[in-house]
Every structure is written in structure tokens, then in C-alpha cells.
Length: 143
Image (cartoon, rainbow, N blue to C red; front, side, top):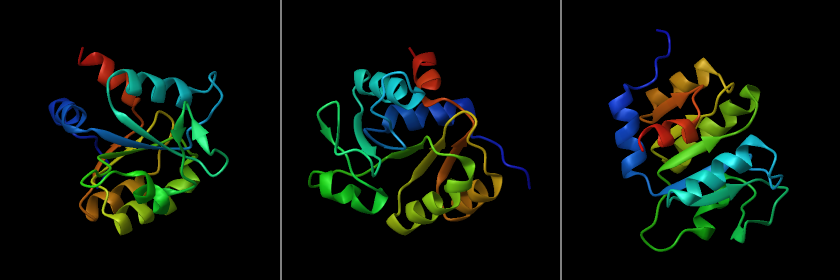
């Protein structure tokens, strides 16, 4: 069965209910799309967790090297609502495996990040998956 993104109202509900977004592949270069998207999400009030082994801090926020270390920066009772991915499609299989192991509820693959097999695996594991869409654009569309 071919992958299909959730309906627009389901995407909006996810974005309205989410509070914490782990951004995998977040860059500290302000000219990179991941930086711009994460900065915009921060402006909308989301808590951003930078996930990049090359960073220790992004915009004053402690970064973690991988998803396995996200729990180190979460407050008691806090959890990741969305894992937003800025990595090439060939890296998504491992990201999905990590998300399923850590029981994260939603995976958002940015524009151009398409891996249908990994998306189907995530869905089969109970995750909500949005693929080949920009989370910033979808959030801005909500007003």
C-alpha cells in the first residue's frame, strides 16, 4: 500500500497538541533550512531539542548527539511529541528504529526526505508519519 500523509485536519491537530519537537540534523548555520525551520518553530512556542552529534548547543539550547540521549534534556513529565527529520532518506531507517525503540509518537520527514519503506515501518509501529512536507509551512498555514 502506498504511503499517504494524514488528512490536513489531523496534521493541524498534531501541531496544535505538540509541545516538544526533536529536530534531527539541526544545523547551527543560519542559512540552512533546518536552522530557519527550527527558529520559526521556537518562535511559535515549541520547545526544540537539537539532535546533531556535531553540536553541543544551538541558540543557547543544549544539543544531544542522537535520539537515545534526548531523555537527558527533558524535564520530569516532559516527552517528545514530534521527531522532525532533516537527514537524507538513507538515514531514515535507523531514525525510525530509534523512534520506535524510544516510543516517540510522531515522525515528520521534511521536504525531499522520502523513504516510503521506513514510513510504513513507523506507521506499523504505531507512529503518526508526515513525509515530504515542511513543518514550518504547515504550522504557518494554521495562522
